[in-house]
View 1 (cartoon, one colour):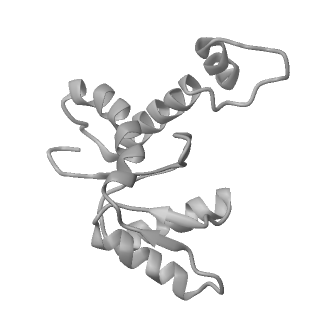
View 2: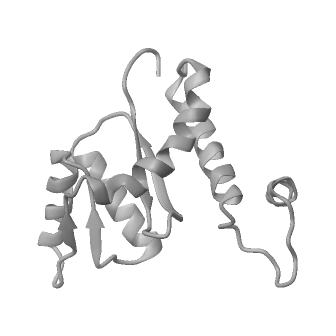
Length: 144
């Protein structure tokens, strides 16, 4: 955004389904903790979390664990984190030709739309039993 690095936090389960995402200006303990608390609040407490070697993610999860009776198991294993990285590749493929964003607010809105369309494409949107709407029909049903 305006030539500055910003960070898209994403949570993906082991089946490749998008759990949650959050766009932040900084990659620090405060931003990571906010993401984990938001994700846990909306989706429940996971048994295990696999993260990359980021120190801020580790510090945030340790802070979350300090307040819990049963701690969340933290794994920092590079090859197990590939599920997140491979899912993130689809987002990068769409945003790279844009050559960056001019405004943080606009970037957040556009990235949210891209994430929702990616979730629709993966079949994560709930539909009525027996119906199989196309991605476009699912998108238009959200708008109308």
